[in-house]
Length: 177
Length: 172
Image (cartoon, rainbow over all chains, first blue to last red; front, side):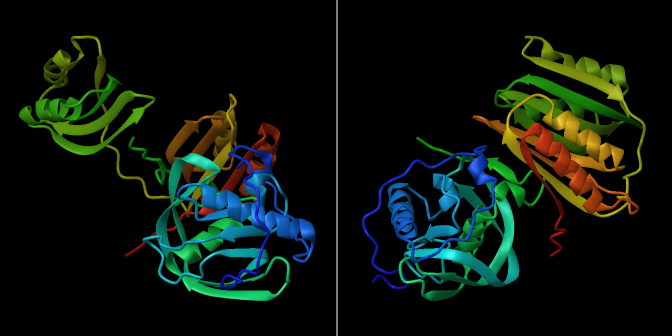
């Protein structure tokens, strides 16, 4: 057990889809958190996320699976305040969302762009733990709140491109080699 | 006092803005509005400048910038337009999907049919992904839900994703 996350098997690193892949635009289906395939999916999401530099979260449809499951870990991120460590939530729901703030977001599935997006900086999110099905309630703020909303948008078939703040709120991702 | 629209388009290099605005400044021009960007490596700038100098003098002064053929410079007189007040609330149209011809023309036509006025627009192509963002003023009489549905129907035919959301005013 690692904080809120039950013990999971070792996952496999999966290929991450890039927009305009159709799987990224389709809403995902709710799944049974106790189903073995969901436990495998949770492990694969974490394995893929951990191997991807700068990736703080990954939704199931980003690896081509239509299931309401995502992984998240903002540990050590400079914009994070509250941090719940390594998480996987099944069938997540945003219960409360307040205090809109603008911030810059990127996405593994839109690797060349970042965007300015207004999101709630205080949220309560519930979801189920993979394997046990235990109800998990996350109250958090700042970057973890933003990341949770970004991942749940994925599960609804939305990208940050759908939420940017204006015609000039998209930016080329700066890569200095 | 005349108001001139100056456009400078061509191969990007350091110093273009400094040269163009320096020339206009020496002619007593006052920059009233300007925008500049780089489109696929091409420098593109539009300036609206008010000046007592006549148009011929401005054209002549800027001509040296176009001499080596790397830049195209144009100067034209424009009428003084009052700053338009939006007729209604502003929305952001976001479109993304696989690049194909006709995305911009087809969807902006749907906006125009609804009386929507696009006040700002940018597009980006990265790899296979095409993104269009447009700020739209809708007349008070237009129903944004009806427009959003028409946009979704049209986008489905184009195989792209579309959303229309109120633009946050971000008042501080």
